[in-house]
Image 1 (tube, one colour):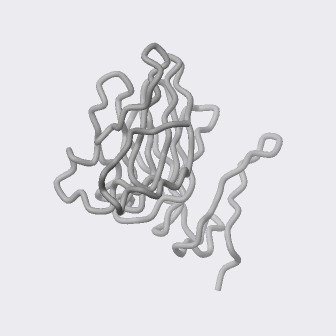
Image 2 (cartoon, rainbow, N blue to C red):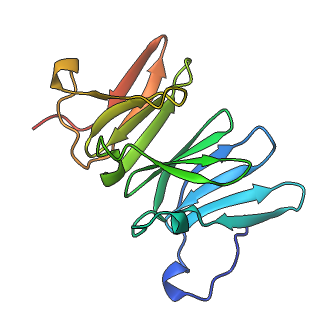
Image 3 (tube, rainbow, N blue to C red):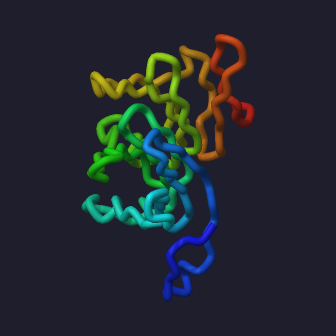
Length: 168
């Protein structure tokens, strides 16, 4: 895999964190230095600098996870969650009020109802892309500790599980 060259020494080490395949044949690659889109028609990667649209953009380039739902690409970063329109690359920060935009996102999961589950240092959330509603899960729901340790979602049978370090 060949990504665009950089002359910036700090960007010379790329850590690949996630990959997402779009229906149009494009492949998105999440790295610690940004988001790349592979265009199969042209045969090369292009950087998508979505973070430049965010006023306070420090930390948004370090991308941890990707998830596609329909025509939207969801990006979990060190700073929070971003929704990108795959066709236009327009970005929207998700969850300012709920503090999702202030937390390291370590896992995203799209369920059968096309809702996005988010594991972050500030909690576990479910985002509805249609209504834009966000539901936070708490101790009352069995969520004990959502420190900045990485957590992951996985499905087994009909159940969604959250795997994270035991509560303190």
